Picture 1 (cartoon, rainbow, N blue to C red):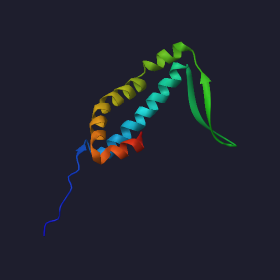
Picture 2: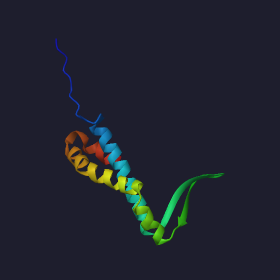
Picture 3: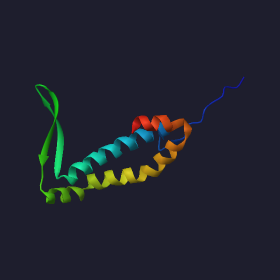
Picture 4: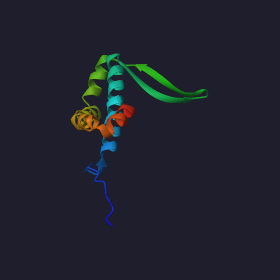
Length: 104
């Protein structure tokens, strides 16, 4: 008797679940980063005797503009932009709707 196999679509080695996870993690990170940059602040997680805390530092608007011109920031924006239509298509599939909500 032949076993039924489920074909899992993969893109560059990533399956749909992995694409959704990467997209939503990066999208959330970029959204938080942009909110902070709009306020001219940067944040960093730091270890304190009472646990992990978020340190907030105000930066000049010029530094924000310089940061937005870095390869790091531009690459992050490009990845999120390129993954968005793929993630939207995957999220519309019944099989991935609940998972998509979990990752958001």
